[in-house]
Amino acid sequence: MLMTLSTKVDAVDQIKLSEVVDELNRWYPPALAEDWDSVGLIVGDLNAPVRRILVALDPVAEVIDEAVNWDADLVLTHHPLFLKPVHQVSTATYKGKLVHQLISAGCALMNAHTNADRAQGGVADALADVIGLTNCRPLVPAHGAPLDKFVVFVPEADTDRVHQAMAAAGAGNLGEYRDCSWRSLGTGTFTASDQADPHIGTPGLTSTVPEYRLEMVAARPLRARILAAMRQTHPYEEPAFDIIELAAFPTEQGLGKVGELVDPMTLHQFAQHVAAVLPATAQGIRVAGDLSDQVRTIAVLGGSGDSLFGAARASGADVYLTSDLRHHPASEAREIALLRGGKPYLVDTAHWASESVWLPVVAQRLRQWAGGQYDHGSQRVEVRVSQRRTDPWTAQFPSSSLPGTEEHSSNSDERQH
Ligand SMILES: [Zn+2]
Image 1 (cartoon, helix red, strand yellow):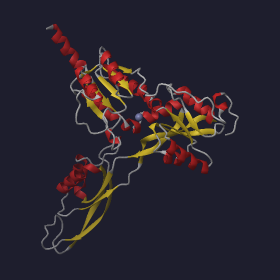
Image 2 (cartoon, rainbow, N blue to C red; image 1 turned 45 degrees about the vertical axis):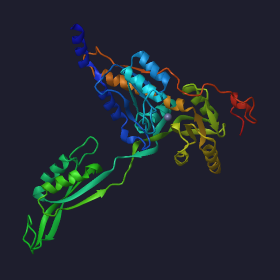
Image 3 (spheres, helix red, strand yellow; image 1 turned 90 degrees about the vertical axis):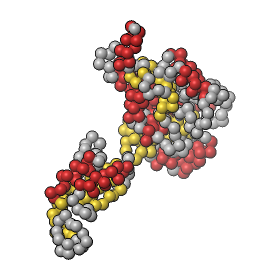
Image 4 (cartoon, rainbow, N blue to C red; image 1 turned 180 degrees about the vertical axis):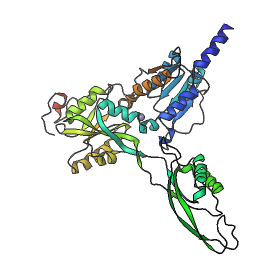
C-alpha cells in the first residue's frame, strides 16, 4: 500500500515523455528538418515518466547499452536510427535488436537532426561558439514560414467585426503580437444588377461607400479558414478582397554559420586552434590551403559539408570548416578557389567532432528546463552526455613523409606553399 502511494506521489511530480518531446520540438522545430530526414520520437511511451536522459550523437549499440545500464528513460541523439523505410524490427536486424532492447528497458529514443542543425541553439551555434566566432549569421539562412496578406475592403461600420472574425481564425499574428492590422479609409463604388441583393444601395444605381482597406497577414495554411471567417462576417454579397502571397525572407535560423575570429591568425594557427578546441579524434584536422595566409572570417557546418561549397564561397569566408570532405568535391572547390586567390581554404574535421560539440549544450538546456518544472525541487531529471566516442574511426597513421609539408608538424608558419 505504501509503495502504491509513493508511486502515485512520484507520478504527479514526474515529467512525462510527452512534455520532453513537446519541449524539444519547440527548441528544434521538426518543420526545419530536410525533406529526406527523419526526426522526432522513434521509440517511447508518451505517458511514461522521464527521470534520466542520455544525450548522444549516434543511436548505436554501445550508447543504448550505456542508457539501459544507467536506467535512462530517454536517449536523445542527433542522428536518426532509421532513415529509410523499415518493414521489420525483429531482432534479426541490429537496429531491430536496439528497438527491442529499448522497449524492454522502458527507455525511449528520440532524435533531432537537421532540425537541430538549422535551429538557433543547435549544432551550428555550438560549433561556432567552440571555435570562438563572433558576429555570426547563418551560412544558408532558412526562410520563414509562408505568409499570405489579406486585403479586404469593408464598409466603415463593419470593419471591427470583420477584423475580429479574421483574427479569431488566425490572421494578424506577428511574432509575439496578435490582432495586427493596417487600415486606411477610402471610397468604394459599385452598381448592383437587378438580380443582386445589395447590403447597401439600390439595384441599377451606382453607390459610393466609405470603406476601409483592411490588411492582415496570416500563415498560408490558414488561408481557407480565414477566408471563410471573412466571408461570413462581411456584409456584402460579393466582398472585394485580395490574397497576396508574400515573398519568403531569410531568418536567423539556417544551415551552418559564418562569423569572425576575434583576432586574425594564420591558417596554420587556426588549424591548431581547431584541433585544440574540438573533441580529439583519430582523424585530427585536415587542411587544404596556404598555411601562412591570414584568416579571420570562418564558415562552419557541422557534419558532411561538401554540398555547400558554393554557399561557403558566396559568404566571403576565408576558411570553410566542415566534415567528410571527399576527394572530388574538395578538389574542385580548391580549383575554383584558386581562380579567386585561394580562399576559402578548407578545414576538414571528423564528423563526430564537429557535431558532438552540441551535446553538452542541449544537455545543459534540458537540465535548466527540467529544473524549472518542479516547485519544491525534490525531484530532478538527470541529464548526462554519453561518454562513448561513436566516431567510427579509431586510429590514423600519418604518412612517414609528405613532400613539401615536413614543417607542418613543427611550429613554423613561415614556409610558403
Ligand atoms: Zn551528422
